[in-house]
Amino acid sequence: MSEVLVLVDHVDGAVRKPTYELLAIAKRIGSPSAVFIGGADKADAVASAVKGYGADKVYVVDDAEIKGYLVAPKAEVLQQLAEKSSPAAILIPASGEGKEIAGRLAIKLSSGLITDAVDVQVKGEDIVTTQSVFAGNFTVDAKVVKGTPIIAVKPNAAAPEQGDGAGAVEQFAATISDAAKTAQIVAAQPRQATGRPELTEAAIVVSGGRGTGGDFAAVEGLADALGAAVGASRAAVDSGWKPHTFQVGQTGKVVSPQLYVANGISGAIQHRAGMQTSKTIVAVNKDEEAPIFELVDFGVVGDLHTVLPKVTEEIEKRKG
Image (cartoon, rainbow, N blue to C red; front, side, top):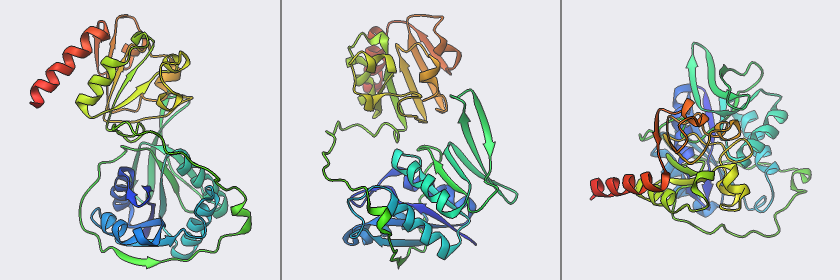
C-alpha cells in the first residue's frame, strides 16, 4: 500500500485538529505517514498523538536549522521526502501557510495541485476532490493528472477517526538550500487568546453582520453557549466593529463548519463565497427578502437582538 504524506499542523508540538482530519482522508487512499517539522523534544508526544489517529509512520524533521524562516524550507523538506518515498498523494491543511507550501511544492515536484478541497474520495484508481469555485457559484469534482497529487484540504472536510496505527518513527534530515533561507521572521507577537476555537477550524461558527449595529454581545453569547467561533461579515469589519481576522468571505477567511449561523448578514456574494460549503446553514435576519435566505437550510425572520438571547437561554437550559 502506497504512503500518503500528511503535513502535521501544530503549534509548538500541540497537534491541531485538521491533522487528524487529514489522517482520516489519507486512510482512504493508502498508508498514512505523518510529517512532523518541529522541535526534536516534541517528537515523541506528536508521534504518540498521530499514531492514535492511524498514522502508520511518522517522519520527524528537526527544525533547528530552519526555525524562524518562512515557508520555503518546509516545501523543500516535503520535496525531498516525496522523492524518497514516492507517495500516492500529499495532503496539507488549507491554511494560508499550508497553501503556500503546497504551491511551492507543486512547482518543485512538477505535480498538479488542488487547493481548498472540501472532500477527497477514491473512485476507481483516481483520487477525486470536491471544491467550491468561482466565488462559490459552482461545485466541481477534480483530479490531478500529472505527478503526485498535492491537495490542500479545508478544515472540517472529514471527521477524525481514532485508531492505532503502527506509528513507526523515522528521522529525516533534509538539505535546505540557501535560497530557501532568504526570508526570515525577525519578530512575532502572539495573538490574544479568546478562549474560542480558531475560526477556520471550528465545527460551529456564529457570525454577525451589519444588522448587529456594532453590538456583537448576542452573537458572542450564542457562540459561547455552542462552543463556537465568532465570525463577521465584510460590512461589520469595514465598520470597525471587528478586526479583519474575524472576516468570513471572499476577501477574508473561507470556512466550512458543520454549522454556520449568520446573523444580520444580507448574504452578498462576497460573504457567501466564504461560507456556503458549510454543512448546515442557519440565518437570522429582519429582512425576509435578504439574499442569505436563498442559501440556508433554516431561516428565522426576526431581530437578532431578540432571537439570539432566547436561543442562548434555551441552549443553556438544556445543557444544565
